[in-house]
Length: 111
Image (cartoon, rainbow, N blue to C red; front, side):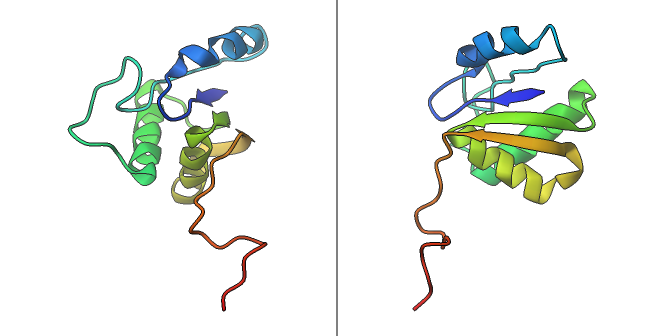
C-alpha cells in the first residue's frame, strides 16, 4: 500500500493511517518531490511529473505494483499514474479528490 499526500502537505499526516495498516500489509508513505523531506526541484512539478516521479521512486524501492490511497492532490497524481503507468497500479482509493474544473465531466456538455 502506498499513501500519497496532498498539496502543501507531506507524508507525516499519513502516519496514523500507515500505523493502522502496517500490521496487515507493507505500507509506504513517500514525500512527493518538493514536499516534506524530499528534494526540492527548481520549480513546481506538474501532476504528470509528480506521477512520473512516483513511478521512478517505486522502481527504486522495488515495488512492482501496488494499491494506493491518495488525498487531495495525491488523487490527481494517482489518476495520472494509472493513466501513464497502468502496470504499477493494482487499485486506487481516492479520498477528497481535487478535480480540474476545466475538464469536462458528466454534468458538463460541450456546446
